[in-house]
Image 1 (cartoon, helix red, strand yellow):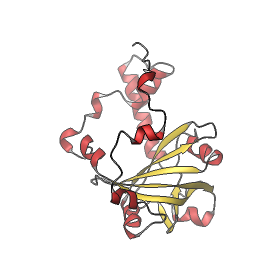
Image 2 (image 1 turned 90 degrees about the vertical axis):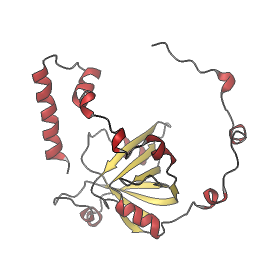
Image 3 (image 1 turned 30 degrees about the vertical axis):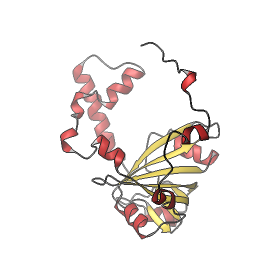
Length: 216
């Protein structure tokens, strides 16, 4: 595949040029941003089993990480403070390292079946407070640390993206078996996947077993 080259004649380089391309923001959209959780935002978080966490390192490198647990896993500590448990992962620690370098974070909360989402921007810190961690125990296992977010902005996001994507529409679901397994993809990208189909199935089964044993 040939490398794509950006035509710099069509680049947008300043905010004024950008805003001239769009109509003014509507009144409600401009007013909807809150500085703290209200009853609706808090109730949305309590229903949500999944969020995306956006962070950025000191060098400007951006990262988005999925976080998921049973609904209500994110704890509302007060109207301007949230706590997100950090569950066992791959130990790359991309998000956590970024938070230490740059506390600014963005959160996108998703509820299955809801087309609208909740967005929160704020500043995060990492806590090992045992009382806080115990609040987030699952199967008698507390997380090693919590991501505590001090809220700066809260607002609901409209349904257009989810409706365009038909994300919750069963008629648009794709068969996972039509795509290579995660193990095969990573092996292809690194050391090379085994050609023997039985060996590949064993590797996939080992990954599923690790999922069962290490989720918490």
